[in-house]
Image (cartoon, rainbow, N blue to C red; front, top):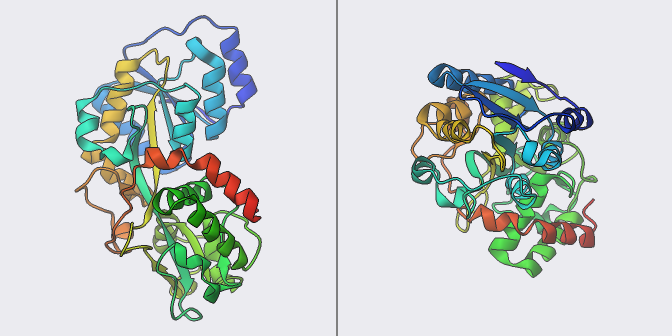
Length: 342
């Protein structure tokens, strides 16, 4: 497998500007990926062994890759874009860098609410965004996202910033499920309950619980599942025992799900190979590895979970149409700005 890692946007775009139109190659696939997990190597090597198709991989941040694809235009070598979060998948669609895919395999295996209405992107793995809390200090933790705004939790909540895609998509789902006015009231209530200004990543929210800086936080399940099975700096095993978790809204819409997914590039020179790769990601083999390799939930129903994920328990996921949720992102950012969520 050949791989260009973390190349700069300017250098990559310049290389295309002086080149001719990209030619299709029957035994190659050009993958643009913002997934940064070493465990994905198994996904790529298995596909290569099964098909004889070599994956040429370029990795970078999602926004840079999307901008690069747009700048490259018709001459883009990209065949597939893989990225994390529904908002980024929708952004790629809106920028015109993806195309519709007609695949009986994808339609049969990926639930409708985990794919774009126009078949331009598909979800291949999921992460539940749930509530974590300090069991020693919080006898009655919030049982829903809405309860995070309850005055009972004033000065207790840690969260990521308003510009983070996970924060934006969560608020976008609250808008879809409860309406814009209720979502704004909720966001303002959560701000009132902050223990500190929003900062850091999901693991930092767990560290905030361990340090005692906050008592309640929100994060994706795969960060926590990973910490349960491996050593994570700042999260010693004895401290992990004091962290409890709640799958929110189990008597209502269910737990919000973040997607990792992808689509076929708008000008894919190796389109058939690109579709084969997406169909492979929907196979039982690949779906099991998303769970075993990166502690994620499969997108395909009925695929078994790894032990680290299964120990978190059975829950009801929110099956709201994520294509609709993604369209609420601009409204979510406006609400965050209005309520002072930094």
